[in-house]
Length: 162
Image (cartoon, rainbow, N blue to C red; front, side, top):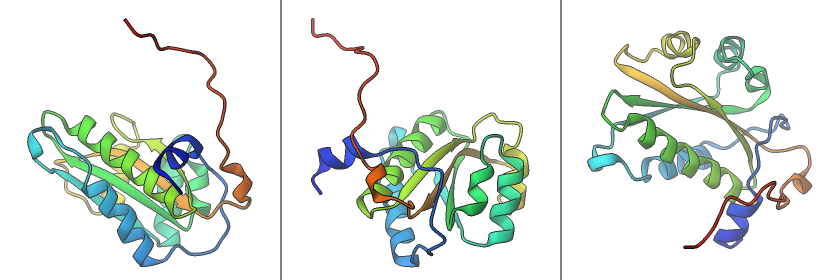
């Protein structure tokens, strides 16, 4: 798949087959996150891949609008040290991982973490220290129908050249 097709057909997927995602693919998705640009190259972003069903259920119970996390074979938590650009750094890492998941034929969905009332509970459930901020949760799994990966129409044009 070429890069633009990957970009244009990435979608938020909230339903998954129960098929496991291999540790190799998870590691490659996380590596894509690690290779994202960071402000001043501080590289203060940390990742936790959660395959354990009980922990995913805990996260799903805490995350508003994230109940489907429990049915995803894996979710990847994006944390950052409290640096000046932690949110931008974590967001860049998250988008890289969403695109990597699409490359591997996986569906994914970004669930907000920063400043959410559930962020501390999820951080504690995963044993991360208090100085780390939860930036995002990424649910990952194989979609039940590969035909979901279609380019969607742009709802409104917000672009001009001056």
